[in-house]
Image 1 (tube, helix red, strand yellow):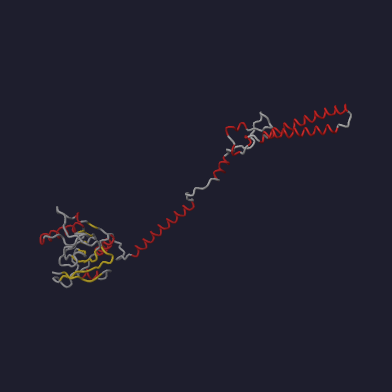
Image 2: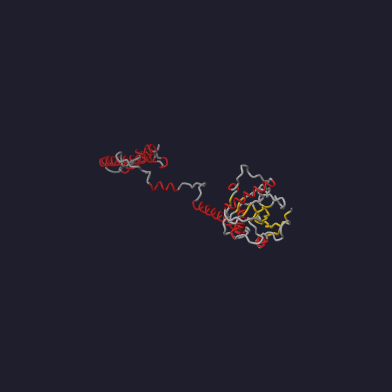
Length: 330
């Protein structure tokens, strides 16, 4: 359409120019007029043809679909995009050249929107550090709390225990009433009023003889919960979970009875025997079988001498948790 309009425009322009030339030579010599008219017409026609051709090529190039925006550029027809002025032999893209370099790819990657669900590494590190500090604070708090728990004394002597199965020589298991309470509140310490034992063989024979004696007399098992020998070892009799067998001592369901093997009316137990008794208290608390606020007692038997076990009790009265004597009912 543009080509047609431009052609009509230039045709009218040429017509007006020719008319002007004819009028300007009306007053001159006829022969000369004809000669000059022909020459001018030839020159004007050549210039007009050149101008029309150039205008038509420009309009055709501007209206071509191959010179649209690079957004609408088609890769498959990329080889057809060439400069119209350069001719068919020079195929050079005019408007768009695709850049596949690594720099362009990195630039386009930077322009991508960030993932909103992605956690920043710095924030993740701060959260982990905060969690570690919280756990460390909990551990320190528990440690300080354990330090405030009351302990009877620092124990340097290790706790040695010989379980009942090591000395029990009977085919049937020991039968005794079970304690109802998990942590016992009272401990009664008595002496066995017998010969002492200073090695494991002697102490095991003492337990076996005691079991046989009580069974033959009253049909009952050994009445002690534990026995501490002169060798610095604790021997399990009825243990932490069973009631003691002394019917003349109070608190069968709340009390442990510990016997010190030997006669300690006139003489003291050995130092290692005292140390093992302290270790027994500490171990019982550690096993949650004895309350940290336990009460320590001695036993008075009206059928015996007034100073029965005096040496032992004179020492125990200086210990923490001492709470006086209990009377053995005969």
